[in-house]
Length: 248
Length: 232
Ligand code: HEM
Ligand code: FES
Image 1: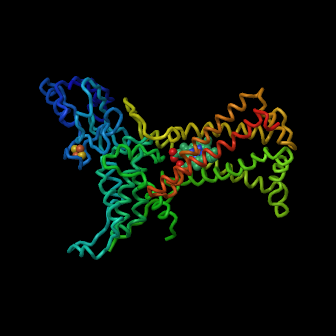
Image 2: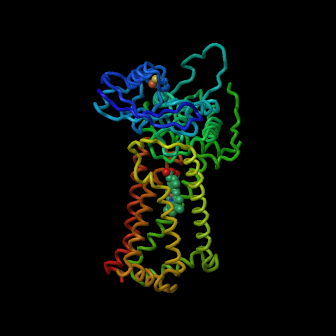
Image 3: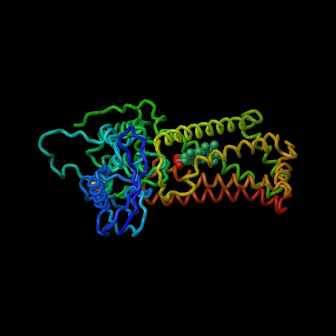
C-alpha cells in the first residue's frame, strides 16, 4: 500500500507546530499503525531528518501510551482498539491519513504526537486509591463481593488511562476516565472508607487540571478502546451529590 | 483501617459536576412549567370564554389566602431565578469547555453524538431570545397587534393570522429548538442526577424524546389551528 500521511510536527512545547505531509510506500496491510510509523521514522533517520516522536510502550493494547488522533478519531477508525493494535488493512491503498496529538489544555504537547498526560496522575493522586494496612494479605474470602459488582468493577478497571476520552470530548472533559476509577473502586468493599472524599477530591483535581465539564454527549465512550460505558458517569454524579450533601 | 481523608472542596456547586446539577435541577423546573403552560394553552380549543377565564384564573390562584396576582408573581420570580441559574451555569461550563481545548483539530472526525447534544448552547440562546419576544408579545402586549389584556384569546388569534406568517414561522422554529434542547437536556439531566444503569438509559432516552415531541405538538397546535382557521 502507498499512503500519504499528514503528521503534526512540533519541535517542543513552545513551538507553534504544523501539519507536514509524508509519502510512505510499500506498507504491508499486516503492519500495525505504529510499525508503519516506525517505517517512516527509519526512512526519516536515514535521510537525516528528525523522526516523528510518538508515545508507545506495550504495543499490545494494555498500557495506554499510544495516543494519537487518526483522521479525527482518537485511536483511529476501529472500535475498541488502541492505535498499536490497529492494522493497516483498515485503510485503503492511496489513502491520506491525518495524524494529530490529543488536543486538551490539560495534555500539553511535549513534542510532535507526544503529550504530557500527567494531569491524569493528579486525578489519581487525589483519590484513586484505597488505604490498606500493610502486613500479611487478608484472607481473600473475608470480604464477600457480589458477582455482578465484581464484574462491573472489573469492567471499569480495564480503563488504561490512555486519554482518548478527553481527546474526543467536545468539552475536553476527563469525566469518563474519572468515572471509571470511581466505579472501579466504589463498587468494592475495600473502596468504601474513602468513597465520599474520593469523588469530591478527584473532581476537584479534574477541574484544577483544566479539563472541561461533561455534557453527556457520549463521544468518549465511542472511542474508548476498553468500551467504558457512559453510565459510569451517572454513578460518579450520584456519588458526588451524596458526598457533597452529607452532613458531617 | 482507613485514613479518613477530608474532602477539600468547600464549594461543590462551583465544580463541573455541581454546575451540571444546578443546570439539571433548574432545567427540570422549567420543563415542569412548560408542561403546565402547554395544558393551559390547549384550552383555546374549548373556546374563547374558557381560555380567557383560565387566563384570569391564573391571577387568582392562591386567593383568598394570597392577594390577587401574588401567586403569579411568586411563580414568575421563581422562574426568573431558575432561568438565570440555568444560563449562568451553562455559560460558566461553556467557557471552561472552550478553555479546555485551546488548539483545535485540523481534521474533525465524524461526530457520534446527536444533533440535539451539539446544539445545546446556541439552541439555548435562541430559546432565550424567543422567551423575551414571547413575553413582550403575549404577556405585556408591546409587540401584539391587539394587546387586549382582558381578552387574551383575541391576542392569540391576531398573532397567528395568516398575514403574519413570519410570526408563526419564528414561533415554530423556536418551539422546535426547545424540542431539540429537551431531547438531549432531559436525558442529560437525569444522568447528571445520578441515573446509572443501561436499562435506565434507554428509558430516559425514550422519556426525553416523548416529552420533547408532546411539548412540540402541544405548543404548535395553537398557531396552526389559528392559521388554518380551526380557531378564530
Ligand atoms: C438562554 C437560554 C438557555 C441556555 C443558554 C441553555 C443552555 C443549556 C446548556 C448549555 C445545557 C447543557 C447541555 C448538556 O448537558 O449537554 C442545558 C441543559 C438543559 N436545559 Fe437549557 N438552556 C437554556 C434554556 C432552557 C429552557 C428555557 C429550558 C426548559 C424549558 C431548558 C432546559 C434544559 C434542561 C432540562 C437541561 C438539562 C440539564 C443537564 O444537562 O443536566 N433550558 N441548557
Ligand atoms: S502501546 Fe500500549 S496500549 Fe498501545
